[in-house]
Image (cartoon, rainbow, N blue to C red; front, side, top):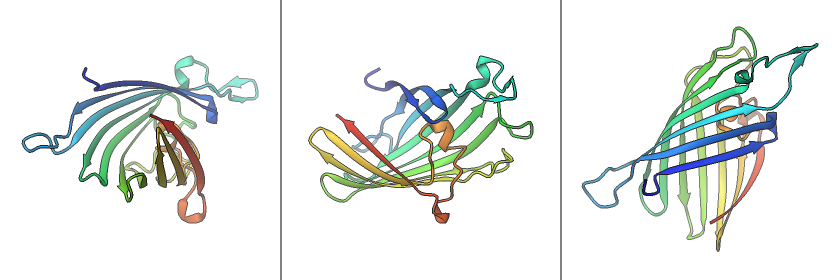
Length: 195
């Protein structure tokens, strides 16, 4: 599909999460006039927790499908200049099994992100995920917020992030962020990617 389709798999220690996802670029942004002013990408992910949970001898995940959750996003992005790009992404999170009977299986929201490149090899990033439904759980959760710095060197990109989200997977940080950035619930993250 001319580089429009991407697949990925991952694993996180938090909840022993295993995930798989697919991204399909529906519309490309046109640099010259007459095309689309934005890029539109569809994202779908499936997540399986491997964490064993029991109350006494009762397994909290009696069926294998109870361990599954899903995230779907429509990512709308625009590169305004070589230095500035931004995106907005409405999202939907579904859990096959929730923590308590009063919790809801579905949660909606919208995420926004921006990247500001201030030198040829350095950039500042910011991301915020706003949950449109706040009463989906009896547990108090917060909107995910993060700021970051990235440095490109040769074929590597180094990223440092400060965020109130402890978890890495989309189904975790979009719906289950337990810390508040303004109350000192800040976590440090570090990534290295190679091109």
